[in-house]
Length: 503
Image (cartoon, rainbow, N blue to C red):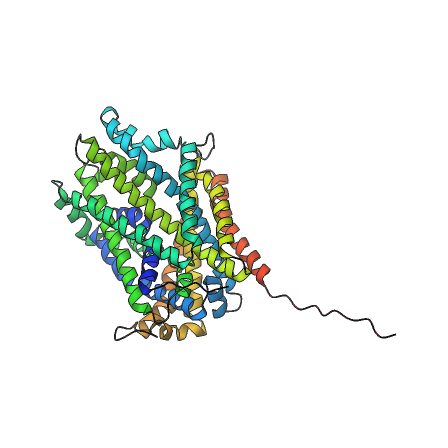
């Protein structure tokens, strides 16, 4: 099997930025800023990004290059049996890809539906505009009972998986080419929205709310939990993506400089999206609606804001709506592609299968599973699955990975691999070691314990059967699947065929 490689350092950086930048940057990050004192959250997040996020990002990329494989191979090279942790990260990433593909299907449809919505807005109430997507397209309910399926959403999800198939089947080359579209175009579209937001009368008030720190918020434990946790989710570390991308690195690549560019782009898009959200919602008088829920913000709050961006000018409102939702849909597809790649690449390599065949199978089966997000209970299901798969599972896997890397023999010299092709600008080995060995594990374990206690005591507010079926059950499935894959790949002792004795 020919080993895939990015053709250039730029291709690797683009693909990695595409993997790191997603809906969390565009929707969840601004909501956290609004909830936790604007500038105070930005300050803590930036410091944590430098001290915690960048070292772990470098470690994963360096492991992928050093051992020339994905997360399972890298983790097993650090410790015997570590491949189980690597496969758990990969399986969890595949489930995340299924969720993102479902949301991409929603966003595709919203990019179309926002046009008639903008023209009909003058005849609708604010509640009708806010609930338009869920009532008129998804036909959703407020409980996990399935009573119908939206064919429109099925079509949108099928389109998302079709795009993912073409991005995945070409390997590293396709990933970097696709990223040129799914990185630059959303950035350009978000920039247009941000510039428009600057012309609102209360734009200064919006920017002050975003950037001026409320230092009294620093005493809130939730601020620290939110900022520290967002660093790991935002950079897409501990999910198996970066080791796979690291294995595709062209020879001579400066990992440390590349990681700084990736982290800077991730932070820039998060801030840019925050400017868009704050100026847009303040400009439309909807600043009180800014919330932490990305789903509610994207499909309930933004439609109301977009329909009043240019007053009664439906043409301009619809154009902005199409730009905004197109950018979000591209971010969702790119994230889904990267998450799927984290599983596809090591699975094809370890089982000696043609990658194109694995991609086809994953897209067909993943597409079928994603259709669960096209039924009337989809809003509830995505809320539960995303919380477990893309939050609780990542916390646990991240904590375990940091301990494994930080306390392994290879971890002691991993900074040498990071700095192998660097110039004067190097990753400080001592900071690298302390971050991986002590700081990141302590933060992730603290977050894990805090969130699990909160989950056990309070739950998510849904029926127990729904939380188990779409939450706890999926977490268990990730562990079981990883264990089974590890067993299938476990070397078996040779059986020596005994010849009958001579007569």
